[in-house]
Length: 259
DNA sequence: ATGGTGGCAGAGCCA
Image (cartoon, rainbow, N blue to C red; front, side, top):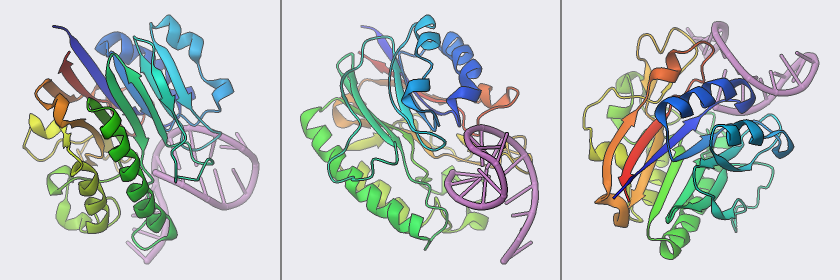
């Protein structure tokens, strides 16, 4: 038996964060990494640097905004970045691939700006359409991992000050219902299989020294299907890269699976 | 209620 270490990281510009990424790959040695907010056109993807680090890569990027990628020791197969019904090719937010017998779906969920904004309505609609896509992925690939920047706090334990935050964006009941409709397909928040306490976050605002004060949110998730649940061995949030100079506002989250 | 910080791109948008 061997272990597959799977990670998700919103890097907030792969161009700027490439040194952090390669350092973290060398330190953490993940087998699969899902990236979000690469903010790179595909022609500018740093394939050579990542190959030198020992990783294959598939990606769906665009200039300035969004962009997702999957890095893997093994060759990713059956790559999908166009989702039926999600007719918005301008926003590169989804990438699916099969790695080592596990189906991996990388999501960069719409932020939504604020409750009631047209971007918020778009977010809820996007979540419903992604749910339909995931239902089909799960039917075809029972060994499924859905991970990424969900831009939703699953519950109040995932918010540094749930009273102050209230039902604002990332915590509104409709967003949480959208996430629950996805997990109700038979997907489990792997972090909560191992840790029940509040105060474990994956994102901290750049402003107001939020990281130093641990004023964060847990919005980066690794969901696993029923078929993989018994193989989960550990889940963690690696705060180390958030402490480096000129960091992403997100830090990597990880899951170890017995394979 | 606003603005604070960062990335991209070169002013304002997005987060």
